[in-house]
Image (tube, rainbow, N blue to C red; front, top):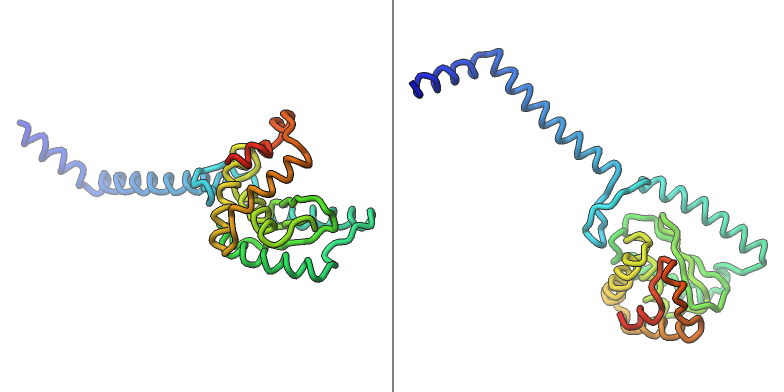
Length: 216
């Protein structure tokens, strides 16, 4: 009886109408799977630094466009304040040399990275989504390398406190890959701690306390 039912079931399934439906359903499921994967990739991407899938609200083209718009606003603001940018040839050429080495080892080497020098003696730098990096004249050579690649990693890992901590760790890797001394990074956080302290209010910000970054 079991063999009879099995043979009957096989004959039914192999008849053209049923076979066609089975193949069609299989094709539909495959299409659905591909569609779901495409939809998933449209709203999220695998973070190249952390390896985790994160919600992505912008395409790379949109990120670059936004960075271009924001950088123009920054240039205009600096011009209004009569703050020099990119015109200290000795410092700027040094920053470009460091940055050109760093951007080759970043996880997002496909971005049109740019670096700009702002005439400001603070030990700081910041990044715009889309590959624009702004460095203050207070940073140079080895110390510049660690702060710059921290900004590269921060962009790639987004900007929450936990991700900033992750960016600090990857900045060490980037420094090493680019041929710089990563341990110099601790000197930056020590100096910033002496100058700015580590106010507990910093917990509301996306960066860790300076003293915590030294310990890390």
